[in-house]
Image 1: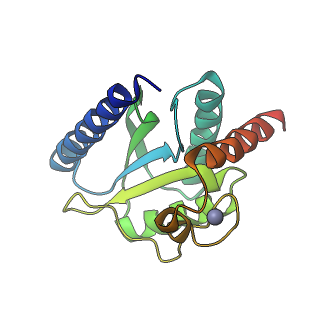
Image 2: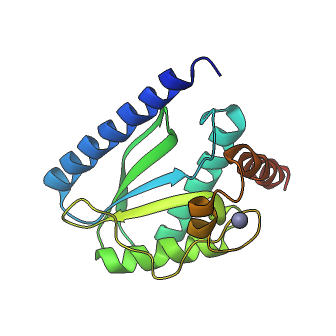
Amino acid sequence: MSNQKEIQKQILDAKENRWIKQQNYLKEHGSTIMSFKLNIPHWPKCSEMITSAFDISLRNFSELLTEKNILFNFLSREETALGPEAFIHCKEVSNKIKEITVNFEEEYTIGRLLDLDVLGQDGKPLERTTKRLCLICSDISINCMRTGKHTSKEVREVFDKMIISSLEI
Ligand SMILES: [Zn+2]
């Protein structure tokens, strides 16, 4: 792909902008700040289907917070070179929000495609207590990444199939 370098630059810029944004939110609101995004392998990171699946997931997640009587407000929701992402400010301790996000990632239909980070005061995301599993072989996903077991295109195919079937329900 001839524009691969350009895409990589856009991705790096988007990551840097996200970092700056997170620091500003932490300064302005304190904890708990969380980011709601998809873990999108390969590219493009934006499409109509991805946006639909993202918005439905975000709506379901915010309904869950309401059910749990957690006060929250949306700080932003936008599409960047990394895909759609939203920032949420929750009036609850970060460990409790982390527990809710991990459960949502494990139980929601396309939870395995979601990437929900809860930020600590230092701006770093809180660690997961369980390892994420690979979409293709269900091994621990970091193992597959380290060994390059699957190409990003292969993982993307599985990702797209899961997105499509979640929209057909
Ligand atoms: Zn795998």
